[in-house]
Amino acid sequence: MSDQSVIHFYSVSDEYGEFSNFAAFSIKLKGKRWPTSEHYFQAQKFKDVGHQEEIRKAKTPMIAARLGRDRKKKLRRDWDSIRDNVMREAVLAKFTQHDELKTILLATGEAKLVENTANDAYWGDGGDGSGKNMLGRILMEVRDKLRVVEPA
Image (cartoon, rainbow, N blue to C red; front, side):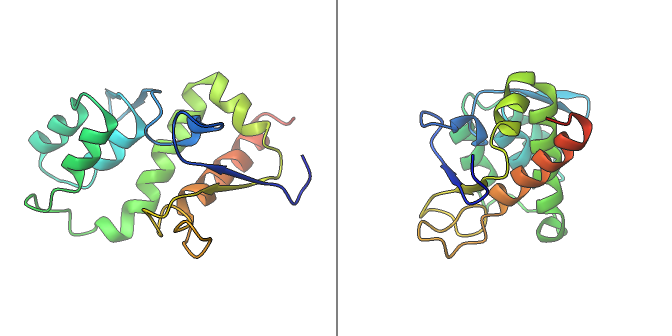
């Protein structure tokens, strides 16, 4: 892959769908198994252990996301300041706990990874490239870390 290449991802059914937090790869963090990185991320928004557990046990990542976005439940006060690190923790766990995912991520070389969605201008690119693409940035950070551990 050339240094200038860009890889867009979003839907789990598309090429590079494994990069989505909705992809069906469980992670083990904080002594528990989470069905997806989305389940883990959404649960960490809350201090209430009961609500965290409800999210962890959600049947699908979409249900977990819906539960995590429910503003009837009180968000952690520090959420805005820790959310990027929570995502880093989840993504790092996903790509270190599944060798096949590590291989796919490392095979992207130096390509820019972009979550292409009009639905999210923070984690994604806003659909038109104007978003922050934080999930893509974190995936590239994790790729760099994995490369140091396992040079190509």
